Length: 326
Image 1 (tube, rainbow, N blue to C red):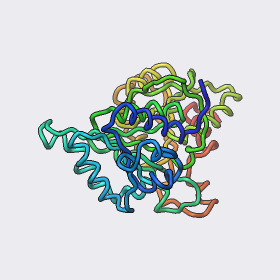
Image 2: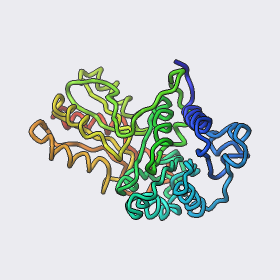
Image 3: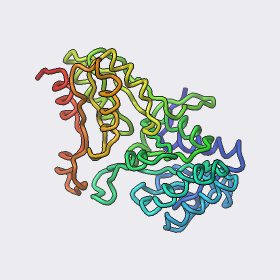
Image 4: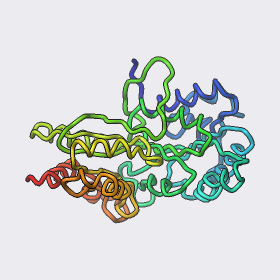
């Protein structure tokens, strides 16, 4: 095992797949000459040249459409958006072309494409640059939505995404690119749609994904000292969701808190709550609890940011409420 940064794990995944398969290429804003806005693609232009590491204009709708056309014609594009906030402009190509192409063509055209970039709040970036889009795209049939929370998962899931014949969206975060973690020396893949039990426990199940898992872990450390045994599940992907993993955990703990860095309405946590009450109702000893971002556009003020986001205190309060203790 060796220790790498999150950005390095992503880079290794892309480099390894591009060395194996000449149909794989990277395109996006500042990915080539500048080595990537967050240095994820550092050095890739030198190795693969400008035909496979391509700088694009600031025109997300345009280059997303070019990538979809390339995927339909036998290539495997990796599209980097500087942030998923900018990719709203490309949502027409993602939702109306990439996601629907296989069905609309009667199976004649697949769309093996990866869209990836920074997602969610990342400090004082204000309302238009701090949105979480997992549930937005998970709503769409034909897409897969992946949320790696650590370098190990980032590499293994991205490699699987590049090899997948469907469009896959990778939700990263500016605040994770410098995170460090261990990865194996050799090649490995992580299947899309398979959750991971990060920690086994007996009293309650906490479900989450992405960078907010770091806050979850802080809360769990406090709860463990108070004698609360928490089972922590990292979804890894939110379309598809590993429902079987969740149900099996609830059969043991009988309680659930879902922590999500997004707005409450039409959220991943709402889908999980419905599924558990439908398929694990007899095992639940308390309602499924949610800890979400406040239902308001994100603020620039540090004080309001702290109030809006899921916090250690709010997670602990939700767990204790589910356990009927104070």
